[in-house]
Length: 233
Image (cartoon, rainbow, N blue to C red; front, side, top):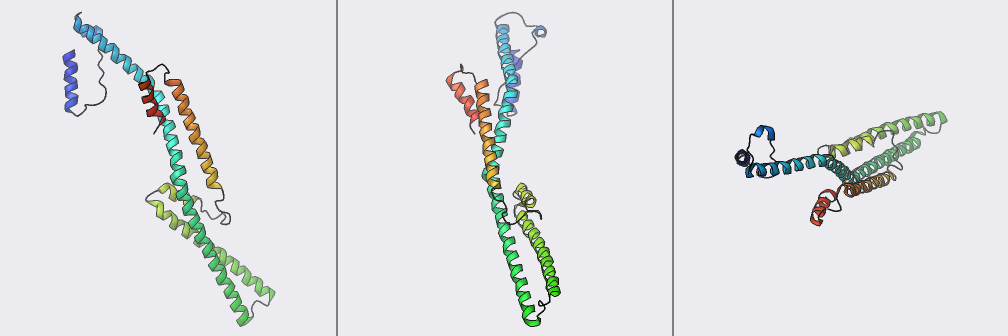
């Protein structure tokens, strides 16, 4: 039996599997081995390996819980420290461009009305004034909508390759019904606060898992190693 185990280990080593743990168990009823020192060693090795396998199986759900919590914390940290600042900067740039464009359009319309009034006096009649006023409002809204969408698509295009999530967020936050004045006031602060709460809860959950599953009676070095793996990045 020991020769078989040694042969398997050599075969695995030749394939490059030289790290990790190697467990060996056997069916005592089918082994046909005779009582003696060799059989005693096999039984001890089998019992030790079975105990380690069972212990590893028991820890699977625990480690899965650690991984899920750490993944959630890392995701929240990434959103707070990377995604939100990039999205906020892109949206503020979009807002400035739209407002500047609106200002140019309004100035052009006012200049046009001033020219028509001085040259032709077309605005002296209330009916004509209302007509031109309505036409100006419609024209302004049309151009505003076009520029609104143009600058949004342009901003999203800059992130389409390197971060599609931010590109989609830009398009989502620049829909035509979203107001330009007061745009984004406080929303990123509220989101960051919610993410801070989530990360704090993640740390608390990890601490609870440590308190529940890290034995206080374990050797000091073992406890430190476990906490380093699951509590710290």
